[in-house]
Image 1 (cartoon, one colour):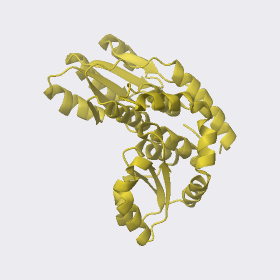
Image 2 (cartoon, helix red, strand yellow; image 1 turned 60 degrees about the vertical axis):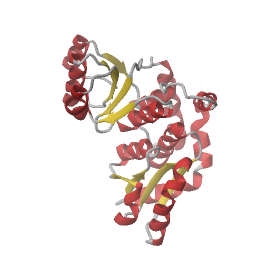
Image 3 (cartoon, one colour; image 1 turned 30 degrees about the vertical axis):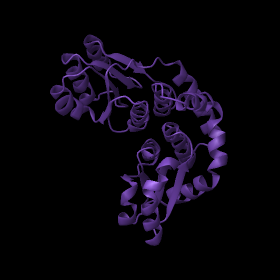
Image 4 (cartoon, rainbow, N blue to C red; image 1 turned 90 degrees about the vertical axis):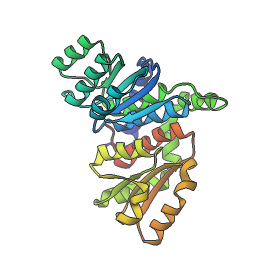
Length: 281
């Protein structure tokens, strides 16, 4: 198990790689697709596009290929995330995008040579994210790729992104109690990860690290399973009744509520997830 110091080192290396990657050029509607295991970065970009005021849809690759793109007459860009080097459904989605005139990007640690050859034939732009923790680097890159916000939020958001170098230390200090409680729950086993829209990247990332199931936060009182919940402070009012109900029913929850911009909250949650598990991926 990695210590927090090694998590910090891995985070800084992933951040440096993320900053060097060229952002996909999103034109028209954004179709953000994620294969299993690649949800954290996809959800970060999807939420960022929504908050920028642009149109976006979040979908699995097969749904994008078979049920979404063929029945729309619009200008769009497909940004697809996968960690599987032989992701057949990702390839099919990008083939469909090519046939339909949709610009395609794939963000991946690397594909099988035969898949890469086919993607190059299709004119798909491959964004390769390699290194020790590719999923973390993909997530950080996606935050950097978020389109410009409207109004005062743009300056504040960019300031948060530029200050990420010390983010692990800030999360360790700010959420030390919650991380400790969550680590106990994770260590005991048989737990569930709960999420809100802004908390989904963190829950998905901790699931990738632990193999635990993830569920919407609304299901916590009904399931009764102890767990870790991730959310942004802006969402607290909408989920207050759920948290009260879970508490009344005796559900043990460690709640990480991040009081930052809703778009960056997912990344801080991912950092907390890495510290809870003691490792990165």
